[in-house]
Length: 289
Image 1 (spheres, helix red, strand yellow):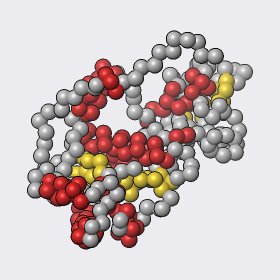
Image 2 (tube, helix red, strand yellow):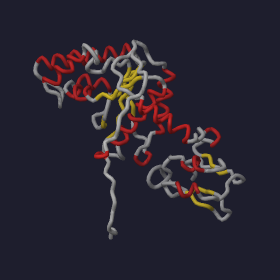
Image 3 (cartoon, one colour):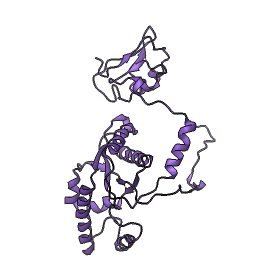
Image 4 (cartoon, helix red, strand yellow):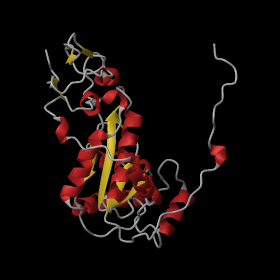
């Protein structure tokens, strides 16, 4: 049974076998006519189709369609001479944004970025990362006020988030007068929280990678963003407010990402150097038996 709706245009198929070599499920082969075909399988996943669509993407002549997706509708590959400097610029010009305009990001922009996260790498292509989103600044302000008030109540009782004692807390309060007007969410009008169920696949890596991809998507759309871990520690001290996010208890949460239109624009990227002491090159001089 062709559950994947795998279709081959036999006139275009060259019989090169590239699709066979990249299929992680090992369910593709070349028939006697040297045309690609798919084996029957009962379920998606390890013992069947991984839904990766590598077969569609690798075919040099566009002979393969799958899941109703046709090769002519895929984005084309761009020459690395163009993509490399663009990616270098995005990485160098990504800054933690701690001041935002009081303005909602256009819903079409947010929806488009979320759609792009379907391409983020994940273990076994399980696509299990979920995204909790506050995309309205009024809703965000309401949540911020609730969490902030509780945080201050707890601090007055000498209760601080894990990893942040009184001195660190007071430092952050002091920074509110300069760089960080909102010590909890940095004044972000929106937040995105990638999370994934524990006990299946690679939830920690998957959630972190998805968040990293979103961080790069933000500057490509002219948005500021900031990875927030302090709010995670703070919300653990206020389970009733954390529960408002409706994230299951068995889900891994690696970060909260604040984002929005930046209030302060940067004129250029930073200049950092990689210390060679952080790079460990392996060289096996003896044959490993």
